[in-house]
Length: 436
Image 1 (cartoon, rainbow, N blue to C red):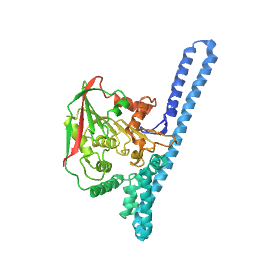
Image 2: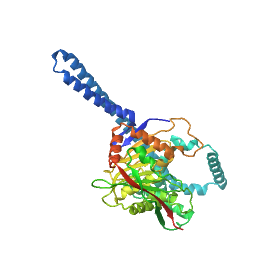
Image 3: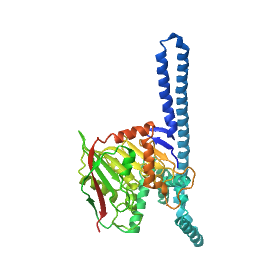
Image 4: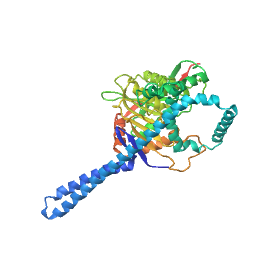
């Protein structure tokens, strides 16, 4: 298991391990200290040689820091260029695959199609029988991210949208008819497969209980409700001098079936949030905020895991709340446009398939993203389907982010946690259900 954090975003191009980024800052700090010592000795004529040596050492430290920063930026630019070229290649292949795919299927002999289906079924059985390590392979995660980025291109190809128009409709272009449209098609398929929803969503809130303000990122993650059929949302209120601070903790997906059951935190809500629609999980969380009396003067801090992180990003995007910060864990909402003045910390694991469903990030992110590899080439625990997505693993990573000295991480951590006043508040847990 790795203790290295890779930091990206925050309006900067640099993507690098935390220790290298901290080393750049330390070079500058040490240079300042050495220069200060030299300045204090400059009044003694007999120490002129020592002062000159100190100035040379300070200059060397500054030059080292600059060269290291330039090298990191150059590496980041090259890596981003390779990723963009790979993404464009996949998008083009997806588009022409969408154009030619139906014809290829029509011309393929039935025996070949049956053999392919049998092979796919056999692969699924192998995964189910315990050979699940491939699901935590970083290479597979990278492929899933690229394919997710090309899903909208494949859809436009199937619809015979002209190539030039398809390029304009891409997320990197005008932004309409992009990944959200592809997710909308998925939502339509889920609605057709599982039938219509069983009814409206109702919420049940517990009585308020005392709680204390969180003082660390790890504490924030520890208050996210588990996806075990219980409450999906926790709402905390802290009285401040001029304004109240409301913390909202949102759970991940609890029901992975296609049927329209009583659980709103299901695949339908996942697809709805990915497509920009107001799914039941998003509607239930907004209802929980209304029930808690959240008003326009309250500062809202949103914390979400998996689907909960996606819901948190959509709530921040909506403009309906005065958002003071967003923290997401394993969320597929990397491309949700949260306002740039909102501090956002997104935590992802390199072996986690769920964040990869967002596809490649479009443009430079204002959000600060912390990525960690859990296995460093070692085989993951094959007894669990996607161990890198587990909430407990993300809590460990957030505890590491609490100790991080990297400037972007420290800034967002300070801004988010600084919203909470000292002292106690009240907390309610909210359970949402579709009414039969």
